[in-house]
Image (cartoon, rainbow, N blue to C red; front, side, top):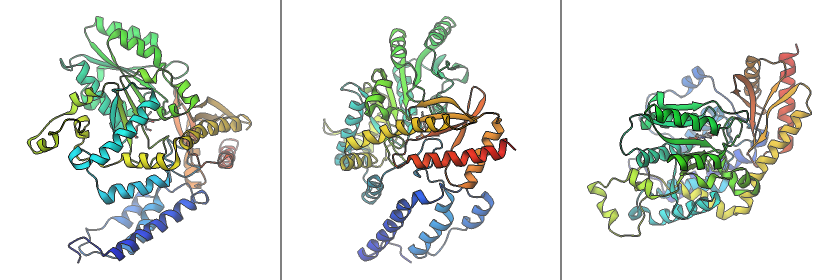
Length: 466
Ligand SMILES: Cc1ncc(COP(=O)(O)O)c(C=O)c1O
């Protein structure tokens, strides 16, 4: 028994080296491995469900079981042939940073407990603020991911625009907005009948004229429009809503503009991204996810608000047991700016990885996402039988095999899952099931793309051209 839950320094080193060796083996051999494995629910439960173990066992034995039964039954989202959803390429510096985050267990909620960590977080937020073109005075915080970033921003929008209550409070967004936004609207209490999901235009963007008409009609009907949600890179097609037009409409109408850039906003680091994302800097709030196109391991999302005092107005509560944390002006308490009190030092991984690789390397890595999507599109255009549904846009391409039904496309995904070489998943655009790739992993090669498409082509021919 080890009731101190402690080990000697020698044993800790041994355990740490074991973990690092396994991690390095895994990462160094990833391109030769399956893209991952989806386990069978009955088999997995049989292997893993057990009564709480009363006695401990050797670390090595637990690691072995972890590798054999758990990690072997996951998709490797950092695999160079994982093109599904939004890949999570990660990077090794941030993996090490995650170990430091847990090892030091810094409490990054208050200045008193985590002044150094708070300063790092403020510094990295300044980098992101500048990247997005937000003015001085804007600020935000790191959260678990895009979902919580969206929730945090919409809670601030509600606080600022609806001090009078939720009655008739109405929000506008397109049918391409991410589902996390609807979840957030549910949480902040916007009634389902006041969530205006407008059909997107032919480019899968929020139609500004239509939006203006809806706002006018809603006002005439006695509702209280308070917020428009735009996407800076939709999950489905990479579409970017007309941010400048939306911003000027919102300004005229006194509405809050929230931009969900969880997927796409990181592209603002590059010249072409900045030009595609013009108007991003005009948002009242913005979500962006470093655990997507800024190559961080989960979980790190970010919310920026044009006037950071709005976050404080929304979230600050000072209980008696935290009064010691608020004795000195100039000290910054992140807990006053978001939902969490206890929060870890997630900014560290972004800070360390940017410092080690340099911003130029990040810019080039992001740019590669655009280039690989264009390569994917070019390959598909040269493959008989395949049609491009939406061209390369912000690292995303949607396509289909002519003559294949929606079910056939979904069957192709299941075949790829079983095959394990690479993974592309499906989505639905205007009622049609299509395949979709997202190519933001900078370690993906052209060979990975060609190889995956060739294999997919073989599967499609076998399935459809029987
Ligand atoms: C556009 C967009 N918004 C929000 C989210 C939700 O982010 P998370 O999954 O990090 O909570 C995603 C996730 O893919 C996304 O693509």
